[in-house]
Length: 150
Image (tube, rainbow, N blue to C red; front, side):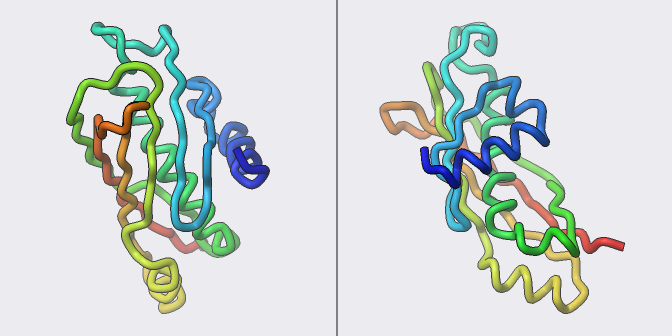
């Protein structure tokens, strides 16, 4: 884990109690990609012994939030990032620890330009959830907005 991703993890853990509750690990956070890991924890298992769907949703949504904060952190004085909607598909059985990798669906400059023009830009963040063997167990898209302050 890099110092930079550790500080993002500490910031999100302080601001978002569910990040602390699930013990999410911040592997990598850049403006291009965020990678978070959900350790295998029996308290968060489902009826078949894998990570509960709600825990995987929270993992993926947290990865999307991390990349949004990293990519648009310099805009926080004038806009607040908010999740607008999310859709998740569970593709394969997840067992053991799982990792979520988030990527932005629109260029940062394009989103900021829309904000500069007085708009309230929306942009997707795509997340893949995978097992340790690399198999994709879920895919999620979270649509975010930057709501101008005031």
